Image (cartoon, rainbow, N blue to C red; front, side):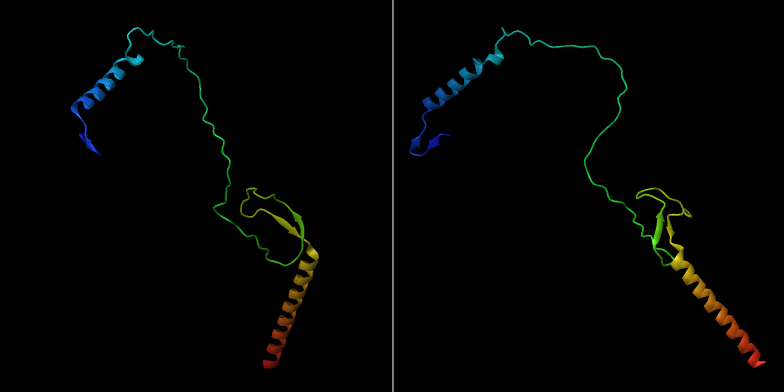
Length: 127
């Protein structure tokens, strides 16, 4: 830059700065020819199997979620599978206490028998 705040740089000062920079570059140890080469460790290559392995810390979330709902009311007597276990269609997962279930079943059968009796009575009355 030839112009500076407060005046003009003289060509002599520019030449001096270039000369100082050139002297610094030429006297650097990187350009010295007398430096010994660095020591390098060398080893022979050998073949071995490498296993791909990686450990990560994280959280996983299931893609699919299933809600299990019983077809009948009652209390669970026994749980036959653990959380996360793989199951197939038709596998027994839980046992329900039979008391309430059997009482409900007996009541529904009695309702069915009553309805059949009413049907037979209606057929007799209409005949």
